[in-house]
Image (cartoon, rainbow, N blue to C red; front, side, top):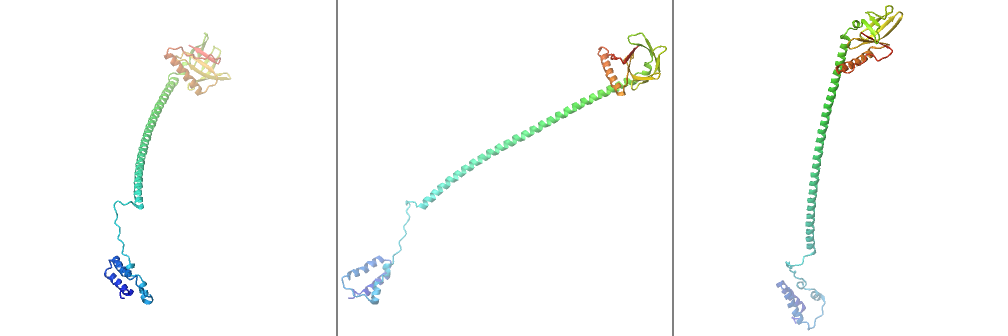
Length: 290
């Protein structure tokens, strides 16, 4: 009767579970054996505290032992996360290689552009230097040409001034017109004598008129009774011919005309050329010869 008492059987199961907690599976098997043995016996009605105690599950039976962790095997299949990390590492390496290659290409292109820029700067600097040297040569040539032109002009002015001075000396200091005009003269192409004194020109014994010379302007003033006239005069280089031209002449006109005629006559004489005529054949001119 004591073997079929459920309360006693539960107390024994609890006592066995407290003694051997690690053998929960074996204890459960031992507890189930008496239960199986008393299965055919009639069960008393379950009511009250005893029924409540018997209906509650045993703590040892309901508690499950912790499952041991499974050890990792070396040849296991990689997880999705591991595969992603591997893929990410490969992509990162490819990207790093591509970036490195791009940086190398960029550095090469930058170096090439820098070399081209330096070459262009060197060419521009060389062109500026050559242009500056060329400009300096041009300025030097212009200075030399300017000096040569100025030297030539200065030489021409000196020569011209020298000729003017020589002509002035020849014109006003070499001869005495008042003395050279006096004497016996003849009209050109005739044997009619004309006597010129210090103040008169005697055409015949009964006809004479007075005159006044201006050796500076090479002009002559006539007075015949109440009539007056004037003109200019010019001697030949050997003073053997005299031309008197009627009219009004100023100082500068006589000077330049006499200078031109004297230069032509001297040049013809030095080059043994034909003599330059003293008279132009004008009807207003009167030529006298000695």
